[in-house]
Amino acid sequence: MILKISTNNKTCNYWIWNGFKIAWFVENEKNNIPLLFLHGFGANSDHWKKNIKSFAKGGYAVYSVDLLGFGRSDQPGIKEIGKLDNGIWCDQITDFITDIIRPINSNKLVIVGNSLGGLVALTCAVSIPEEISGIIASPLPDPIGLKFNNSENKSKFKSLKYKIIRLFVSFLPIELILFVINRFKLIYYFLNFAYEKKEFIDNDLFNLISIPSKRPSAARALRAMCLGMATRSNKLKSSFLLKTISKVKKVPFLLIWGEKDNFIPLNYGKRIAKLFPWVKLKVILNSGHCVHDEDPQLFNKISKEWIEELSKD
Image (cartoon, rainbow, N blue to C red; front, side):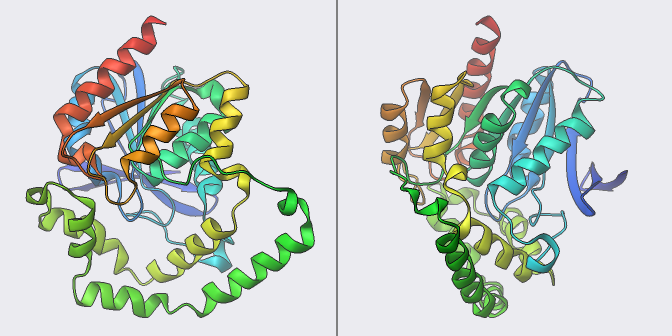
């Protein structure tokens, strides 16, 4: 079922996925090349406002989705969803492609993700490579080069770890934490840490992050994310996912990294490019964690040129 609501001069569509309401947007749906934007942690589809119009005018059918738990989408807790991790979000995107994009467009997608969105895009590249022509991650979270042991295969250890973390997360005062963050506008401090170019930190950006965090269901969703990301399988971590792609047909992969990224330092990106030579790394100078918002023209240019090269291969 799809509902349409006009907001801020654009139409917000709602899609019911597994009983949850998911917000999504589209520009120039009838264009030939489908492009899907996935936001980072705490953000939503509005974070791509400086990019969507440019790609839509460039001949792309541009989709963006609020991941479950973020933005205008539903915010389920542990009781409703169990946990939230990049495996769950990958399932959401897989079904979104099937239910929303495929009835209109049969061409392979390029998925563009900021931070957490990049991790979800990478997860999709492993899960549904036949649907994807390329991935752009800007940047990609998770430590790289990890060596996994076999302890995960021992169910009793895995079960005990899950129970301990769930107990810890259950008692974590997330409601109080969110109250303090919103009461004292601490989101501005996080944004100042994330953005190298401080002039882009305005009320619109602040509201983009803060309004969803004030919803009554925000704390329970964050609790489900803490549980999910802390207990997820090694198979859902960047190192394993990249190694998996290396062993099979490689989905073309572009990393766009801000030189001054404080959250995920550039050294992470350089390490990925060194360990996986088929990954292409582009560095944007004097930019932070959200290069698509700080340097949208350069981000769009680099992305478009790379996507055009894909069509020539």
